[in-house]
Length: 376
Image (cartoon, rainbow, N blue to C red; front, side, top):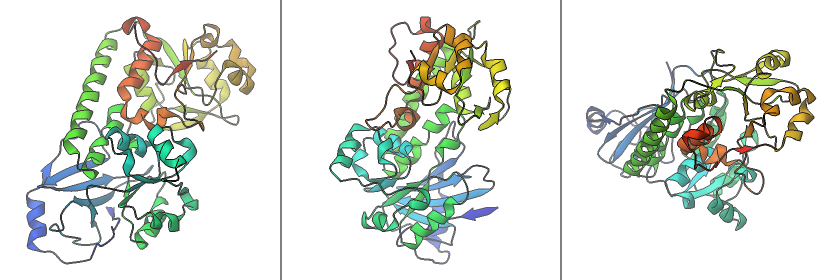
């Protein structure tokens, strides 16, 4: 097993001691219902957070963190265990989804830096950016490490598409900046993504509030799936739009495919048994898309003309002829950032409500779409 660790500022190597083993002996596991990418275990006011396989195709990779508001827990036993001081007061977010989680707990004011200011939708954070209170720290290889250091963050929240993210983590570690990999995007279930709110609850010492919020969302989501579980008619759905001549098709085990199924839809590529998106020949897509009753999430298209400009043959699709094309870009920020990817991560029940209203409007007759809109 490959075990990695991110050392926080002030961590000092030390040998085993009685307090350490006492801490391990009395750990209580926090229930996690859907998510598979983390575990939480508590002992008094301290938390042991384990992050599992936090990038694509990672296998047997784990990061261990002690979250504590007291110095009485061990700083470190070996190079695999570290500390993060809680509650977090200043955080740098390298993904807009981190903003969604933090804002959901009412802690937007704690955000000290972000990556990609043009993608921010949150109004409070936009104002902070406009007042030069929250700088853009760059991204990937272009991260401004000197700027991040000057912000004196308690924590940098990062994510990785591949294992190369450990290079970024290592540089931040060398600067003494605590860094935590968040991998909610790898979860396949909508509620599994949202359950990462429990990690943020631990970071901000709002564990009970995070659990209550998750349980409320989960209850609503499960109630909605109950509305669609017995439907006899499930309209067919196609997803996406070609990009540079290639159509990347989400697999039948993906997050969006799960949402479509829970909303009472029949995804036309549901038999593609993979979790991510893979390129499929355009002609193959047209074979299945031609008769699909609904078309959802057609890229960045803002109108049907945007779709036709990609390929005029789209005008012949049944979904287009019947005016049943919907995109998830109704709620945008001033610079084009999409709330679907920021706040949507903590509002899966609202996204599901949108989809149910689109596919089966009779089930939610007075509903108003939040994230989706019909393209004209």
